[in-house]
Length: 266
Image (cartoon, rainbow, N blue to C red):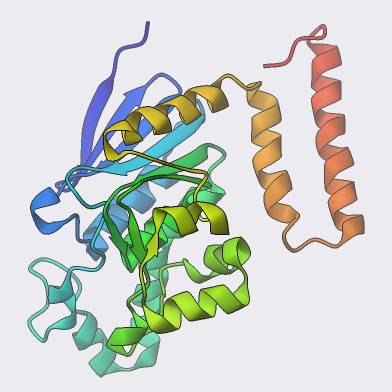
């Protein structure tokens, strides 16, 4: 039996390691897990230093809401204490602000790039940055009270935390445009029907459902799962010929390793 190791990469982020499973918990429920650049830097640092032995990552949150999105203080002249002043950067011009946003995006984009399969367990509000963090994961399990929304356009902005690409891949251009432009809520039933979530469960069963999915993934042969994630990701943009080459190269690696290992796969 493995023992759980707990750390705090950020005051509002808890990391719990249990063998090959890492659980990251947004832990600022009093503010509905609103997000800041320092949190995004912490998420990026965790992803970039992820132990190769971690095979599955669950991203979850304490409280009634997964994340209400950006800390609105960041869009005020005084900014959020201890955080980058976004409006101050904007006043200096487009280039410094774009450079800063590139750093912000890393805390989201990293989760599709790590070898581990990532699962978002999402309850209540997941708005803006909250929705984009859920989209950053490979899989999503939602509570039946979930309310997903992109509210950036209503503020005169656009989603900019690496969420537009996965949203369009999952639901298509037209529905993604409608969801973002209107800022409306996507509820649990539609989320599952549209492919945004694998399953919707009662709120008190959310953590157990995410854990069950994690256990199922951990039960798959490790080498095959590590090949499968990038293989399926490449299928989105690859030509048929390119994808077929990726398939045969991945299969060749696995079969060769299996033969060398005496027929056993890791």
